[in-house]
Amino acid sequence: MRFMVIVKATPESEKEGALPDPELLLEMGKYNEELSKAGVLLALDGLHPSSKGARVKFSGKSRTVVDGPFTEAKELIAGFSILQVKSLEEAIEWVKRGPNCSADDYEVEIRQVFEMEDFAPILSEEQIQHKVERRADLPNQTANK
Amino acid sequence: MSAADPHHATHQALHRTIEAVWRIESARVIAGLTRVTRDVGLAEDLAQEALVAALEQWPQSGVPNNPAAWLTATAKRRAIDLFRRNAVAGRKYEELAREVEALEQTLPDLDSTLDNTISDDLLRLIFIACHPILPTESRAALTLSLLGGLTAGEIARAFLTPESTIAQRIVRAKRTLAAKHIPFEVPRGPELAARLTSVLEVIYLIFNEGYSATTGDDLMRPTLCEDALRLGRILAELTPTEPEVHGLVALMEIQASRTRARVTSTGEPVLLFDQNRTQWDQLLIHRGLTAIERAHKINTTRGPYLLQAEIAACHARARQPSETDWPRIVVLYTELAQLIPSPVIELNRAVAVSMANGPHAGLTLVDALASEPSLARYHLLSSVRADLLYKLGRYPEARTEFERAAGLTRNTRERDLLLTRAASCETDSTTNDQKPATSNQ
Image (cartoon, rainbow over all chains, first blue to last red; front, side, top):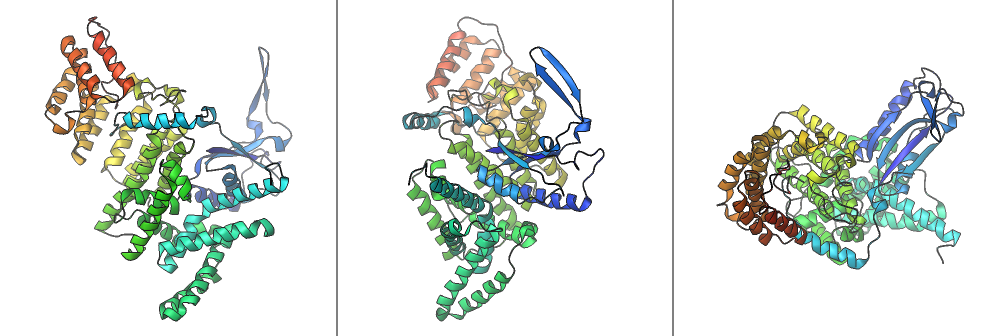
């Protein structure tokens, strides 16, 4: 299963032209390498401050654009990654191992990504058995599936 | 105790946390212990004992700050105790006990994954679990248990095999490795290529076990693909200069990208050319294409996995079936057929040729395969031939061949489809769609 790891912003990360401390970057790099080596990191990106972004407000048929920056840093996002792991607990364990990126307090939110299994109906043992038998009848697909 | 009991709920949550720690750490703990004990079976037993100790002690003491270090230290202490008890039996154990004790002084810190020793131990563990002396199914079970941190029960569910059978396979495999004194090492020189082939074969077998199942059969099975991908990605970081490892990872990433599109909501398989390509997972496709690039940067020779990955990539890049680069697929299949001569690959090549150069060119190749004994009862040969005849307007011949294919397939749904197509030859239809002639493509 996949989880989106959402790193919330801080006043520091929201500063215009703010670049992280090189030592911190090195530590983050090492941590991300650890995730890659464990085969769990699918994607990873950092975001510019909200001053470079915009919001589109939906109300009925109207669409209103509001340019950044936005206040309330802790409700904003500074970066995200996608982890493929076995459980929420495993995602939590990996996140806890990450370095602290800021002198300010901040939060990292972990959310499960919807996957096909979430929509699959729950099958009875009988239906499963039927599928297992039918699987044996499927054509042999060798070189290219 | 009921599930509503808050105490029980906390206990369950802690149990899941310990499982997660185990999943992350077990391979490295076992690998490190195998290096000092020289016995992978014993190493796993010691690590398991440490896990049991964690399950007993953490509910009272709380989860330690560095659970990995705790597990390793506990397992090593057990090793020392064991060797001390056995010390009377021989000096060898005394030496081992001293070695383990010395190691215990240096507890791993959080950066330890970057430590080369640990990476080397992990790679050794992969090679020993996939040792060709073991039967293939034992290699798969042992790899999932030692490297994937899966229990015998989880492996059994994934392979639709009784748990006792899997447990037996793992026990026997460990016994064989000990009895034959298989060294804990990364093979070198000419042996490396052959041993690496065995490792890749095991990972791909695990992947296919999950992939060939129709999704929704059992929630465990699709996760086998994820287990295989995780093992492949780990291996790619441990052996970054091996192009075939990147080739296999690319092949698995691209195949896994189609998971959502390859079955209907009722679990019926959907052929590649009928799949809704907007449902393909672009993140996995991107990862697959990146893995192919990594392989290309190493050298220009292409092994079987990389070739298959590149064929899969040709389909992945085409937003619509009509955009498929068939001439390139022909080149890739030609190379693949030279590396692993197989009538099935030849048949796939013939289909690609028919898409690139027209049905006549394809039919010439298919007819050349007609005398191949291994394909005599292969329904896809007939269905491909029937389709090409149909496209050439040779309807009576096409009809006979469709009926022949229908008689050979064991799949009822496919039989119905083939009989429908046989019947359509009667109506002298002139519609000629641009789909390839086989379900294989």
